[in-house]
Image (cartoon, rainbow, N blue to C red):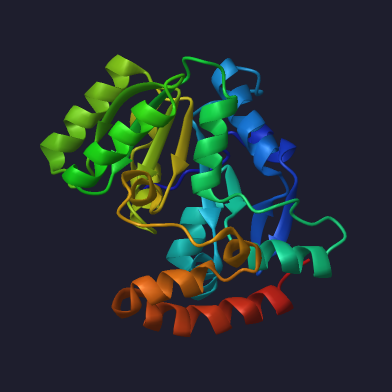
Length: 262
């Protein structure tokens, strides 16, 4: 993967950050994150050389970031990293004088952006399976009629399919490209193709967002989210896929948060 340096540097300098578990996370509230997206779309950010590249961190990502130089390199090239984990926000309030204001869940960010960005803001959804993305797109059209869904594509593309995707983006010129390929595939895709995404104003990696939009997965009750127990809810629903992951990453990420925050 090519080395990308000094991209959108003036914008990075404007975004306040807080070290959480050794990773620089944006000290932006959910609403401020939406405002930053709006500023990028409206051309109010200084010297936006390439799309505003926004991604998210959680306990699993913190653990991966600490263990892998490859993962660190991917995330360090993002313009904005939002804390998508309530324990991260809580510990930032306990251990730092300038904490992260609140949790910026990608699902909540999508909802807020779709309600607060100017009417006619255009989206392109890219990721998950053909069936899931169809259902996610239908949900967006139904729930957010003020948003223009410019297009969408599943994430299982060969070289020809990727080329068609870039042609589609150049033709449609969506304001925001939401990419849900999972970590680290989505970050790799963005950085590998950043020069092919110049027709887009904002690129936001989205993890499992489309699964929530399609209805194939449900979110934890609000009380569990606020208590930082969403991981437990997800584990109960998908024990074979998630139990071992959380057994390994949760203690490690907690250690990182307690020793590398500030």
